[in-house]
View 1 (cartoon, one colour):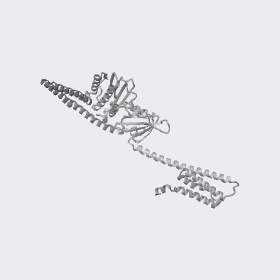
View 2 (spheres, rainbow, N blue to C red):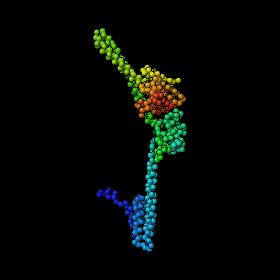
View 3 (spheres, rainbow, N blue to C red):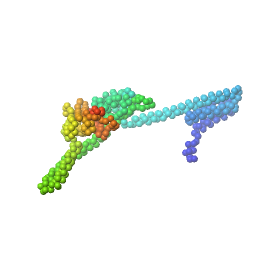
View 4 (cartoon, rainbow, N blue to C red):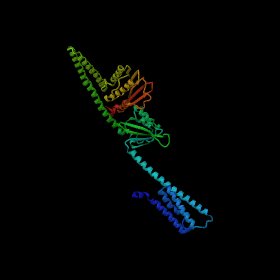
Length: 457
């Protein structure tokens, strides 16, 4: 057997020491007779074994000590009129020894568990204190029970004891407080799982920050949920990086659109004119067959030119260089002419200027919603409704079609891109539908955003 096996099979030293103590007490009891040694002197050995070796071994040690004492008592002491008295005394001592061993092992077990809990609590506290994410724990009434230092930067040092709903009212503007994310945070204490994004005003040295959060129900031993954990993540830098990437992609997309329109399309037009001229020359020379073939080639070139122009308009939407209103009106007119569906823009007054980047994302979101309604809803009417209030711009696409089918388990790539674009510009996107009652897409963007540097184009 190797050395590791030898060490693993060795008897633990505390057990050896305890047994030797019990045997020494038995030997002293045998030598001294009934006048000197008392059974309480066996207890240190039993306690030592139970403390270091656990409950089962401790009870075994208690039984061993009782047997040693009873054996000595049987062979060295007399004067008892009945044998059952000795047996009764032995059982009584085993009860005392066993109780002592059980209590010692229980105290030791609880002390070990308490030490482990303290270590785990210290580790958890260290993790929470060092996390960049803010962690908030609230009870079922939405009252904050705990927040780590990162969360205290969002909620303030005196946040514990306050309510999440009160914090929403105090720190978010009207548009964000009434958004889907704001409503979710208000009722987070009810155990509602979800996620969202908010702009927190004046957080972290006075700068407004874009913050993402997720809520998860506290799950304990009981079936019901008694609270919620909210994790906050500062997304400002990430969103700014994503916007820079999106700006670069938007510039490249517009450049490709212009190159298609001003370059390829013009060359295709020139080719079609040259083909027409060559066709007439062939007709004059009496080469009718060759002229017909060239005429068919010119037709294909003109068809390719139409498709290229359509691609160019998709990459560089018509009217967007003027204003969002003009682009949406052009979109509605194109859909009506192409599909026969009544599509119109409804706005009582001109839309506010938001900048090319923001308007481009909004247009692409609405265009995706309109095209989805045109292709999939069997709608007879599509409305593009634009409403500007004092603090937000609300854009809606409403159709009277079939709605989203009930069997659709998750949104498609188009919807995911729409929500991604909305997140880039700090907008709140809602998509709702009822089978047979149509669908609507609502995009709400707070106008207060555009005074903040992180989301300016």
